[in-house]
Length: 323
Image (tube, rainbow, N blue to C red; front, side, top):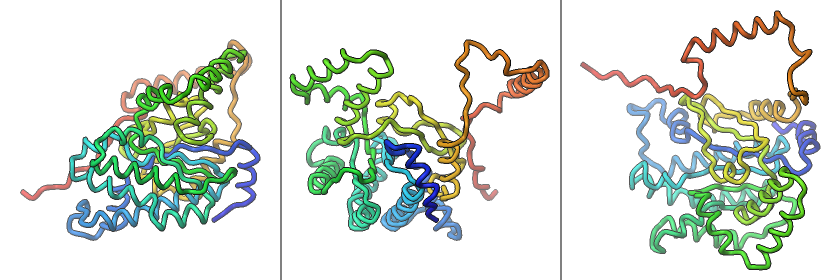
C-alpha cells in the first residue's frame, strides 16, 4: 500500500532522486515455487511464454513497491551477456525472445501508468553480433523503441541493463566523442580542486553517455543471497560508480518475493538510521574496558568458526532417489 508520508520523506531526503540498483535473482525458482508446487516434477517448466508473462507481472509489482515509496530511478540488471552462452543455446534462444516483453503493450501500459521513461543499457555489446543474430535484432528493436518514445524531464527512470560489457562501452566512448567534446571534458577536469569532485565529474560524463540520460550515483543495491553467496550482479553501475557510497542489501529468497514492507524497511534503514563515523584518528572515549573485553570475546568466538563467514554457498537438498 502506498505510504505518501514515507514517500514524501524519501523525496525530501534525496532531492536528486533516490536511485537503486536491483539484481533480480531466482526468477525460475520464483515461478517454480508459486506455479509448479503441486506438479509431479515441480522443477520442469513446460511453457516459457507462460512463465515470462507471469514474471513480468511480478517485475511490475516489484517496481511499484519502489516507486510508491518515493523511489525515482531504478537500474535493473535483466540479463548478463554470459547468459547467451553458459546455459546452453536453447535457454539463450528462449530468453532472447522473452526480452521483447520489456517493450510490449503491457510494459508500455506500466511505463505510462507510473510516468516512467525506459532506457536499455549495455545493448551496444549485442550490436557487435552479426545482423542476422536474434540477439542483435532484439537490441535493434530496443533502439527503435527508444527512438520512438517521448521522453520527458522529471519522470521516473527505469534502466534495463542487458548484456552489458562495461569495458567495451568505455573503450568505444572516446571514439564517439568529437574533439570539441573531449576538450570540454578535459578542461572541466583541470578546473576541479579535489579528487571527490573529479570522481563526480567523470561519473557524470560517462554515465550520461552510457545510460543515455543523467542518473545520480546509486544510493543502494538490492540483490539476493538465496544460495548463500553474496554476488554483485550489476556490472555497469559498479563500473561507473566503483560502488562509492553504496549500501548493499541482500534478501535470503528470490528477489520477486520482496514485499512492500520489506522494501520500506530497507529504505528506512538506508535513509534515516543514524550511522556514526568518527572524524578522529582513533576511537578515544567510545569504549570502556568491559565493552572492549566483551567485543573481543565475541570476535574470537566468531573467528574460531569458519562457517560464520558471509557469502558461503548453500544448496537445496537433493531429491531422494528410489533404491
